[in-house]
Image 1 (spheres, one colour):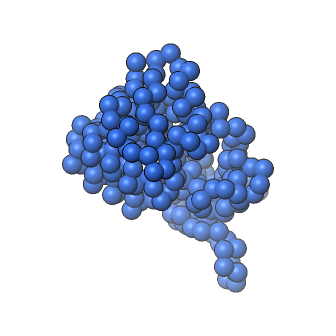
Image 2 (tube, helix red, strand yellow):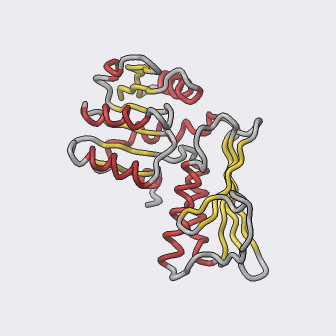
Image 3 (tube, helix red, strand yellow):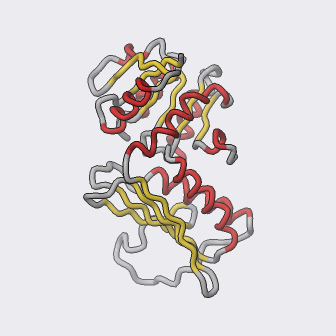
Length: 247
């Protein structure tokens, strides 16, 4: 049995993870921690799953690494600076594995992979990400990861920044820019998690879209990570792609 601790256990995603781990035949829920709870309840876990808050996740993760606990992280907010900081921690804890996942949905991971494949064939690319209005960060971790993958693919193909003749704009009208890719964030009641990647070429466009309508869509990816974390190298890994044979 894989012993699983959950950080953010009383949140919407945390509750779903706890229920899924409890129902699975090969995992045991051994620790549930939320705001103001002692992290010591996680000691003895084989894997700690973190679905907390962008303001709390770094201290949680530092504690896990310092206590030799493997971690699977679904909390958003990991840009290059935060990832570099996590690597500095794992370098000092060579037996620990940390997997940070921008999106646990298998469909979303495939969407990002398809976008990276398409990137070198089109002159233009932009991203629109749409989430519920309770989401704390913008852009989403998924869109940041997608933009980075598109930017990397374009660089390998010898492409520069997509053409953009805009000279006058109101602040935010063109979204933010990540690796030369414009990313636009929508926050709206009634949504859960959605993303469109738009490509434009000569007389044609390509749209790759993924929609999560229920938090249950993330659970197969969470369990894939929990069950296969030991197959990853020690240190930091970003994304489910290695566990899906996509990297």
